Amino acid sequence: MNYLAHSFLSFTDGQIVGQFLEDFIRNRDRFTFPKDIQDGITLHRAIDTFTDSHPAIHEAKKVFAPLVRLYAGAFVDVSMDYFVANDLSLHSLAEWKSHSLRVYRVLNEHEEWLPENFKRMLAKMEQDDWLYNYREDWGIKFSIQNVLNKAKYLDKDIPVFEAFLEHKDILQKCYNDFFPDLLDHTKGINSLLQLEN
Picture 1 (cartoon, rainbow, N blue to C red):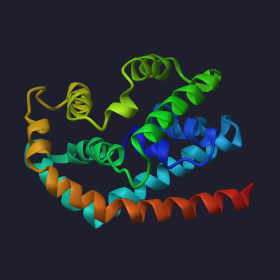
Picture 2 (picture 1 turned 90 degrees about the vertical axis):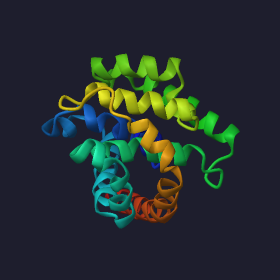
Picture 3 (picture 1 turned 90 degrees about the horizontal axis):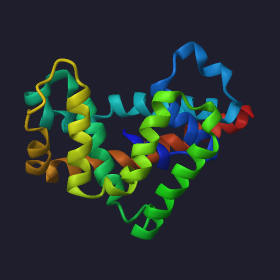
Picture 4 (picture 1 turned 30 degrees about the vertical axis):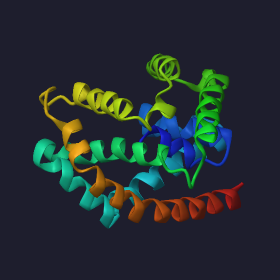
């Protein structure tokens, strides 16, 4: 899952911070953070592990694998944020907008814990409102291109976005089959984390 899903699947402000930090810190540094941020890091990892093993995600990867092989999972993660952002059973559009603004506020309020490379990304994320705009085709196109630009061994002109558009109905079904399971799993992990507190 990508940024929007990880932020949505957080139960406290600290967990939001930890969910975002997980990809930006060394494993050994995770214990230097407050407990609620550590819980977010743990939650992020649990989400990724569950996602990688889910049959619907294996199906979704088939959309991108012919183009990008082992990078297919990264593009599925980005694609899933499109369907999360458009899932009005989770939030109305106004609520998604409010959620996005809350996430930016929470991250900025915890600036002391953010590494410099994350702060730079956060400024761009907030300026262009990535989280809310994942609901738009152009927002996902931008995100897909970001992944292509960062991927060391992929050509930058691979038509990944075109594959997303062509197979959007398949990806939607994969999301429908997957996300309720992930939501239940995440609630269970959070309950375990709360027992530790």
